[in-house]
Length: 154
Image 1: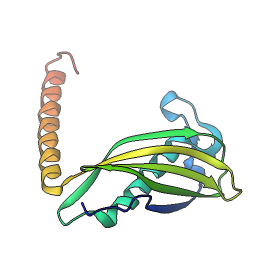
Image 2 (image 1 turned 135 degrees about the horizontal axis):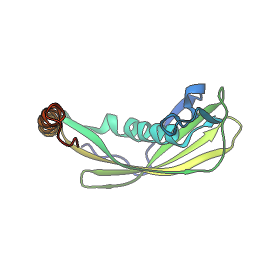
Image 3 (image 1 turned 90 degrees about the vertical axis):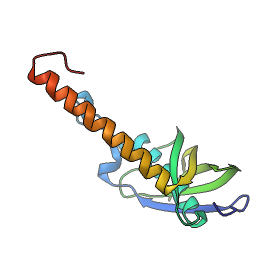
């Protein structure tokens, strides 16, 4: 990873859409609050942190997210623009930590938080994903065999 200047920051501008509002489908409920949801904020925080990292990766490197923290402070409605600012908090070896803020076009501070990324070799990451895919395939096969034989499913 190339050196990232202390305090370096980037912005990610988004337009809040109806799809980004609160929905609790998994809970058997329909739409919740008609405002920019915390889980979409977390997604955009991670995207802003990645945007900061991208120009500093060296050939063959890839970043993976390690954490996202969000403090949701105010609401934004569909149709509002929200600017996310990611700023380098620290770089420790191959770990990048960013502070993130999200501010609506009205000037309201919508959310603050932090993200973490770990920079590794892309080939190593792909090997790890390959191993995970193999483990998943074996698990699915075992689950299918258990289901066919009437055994317990996991």
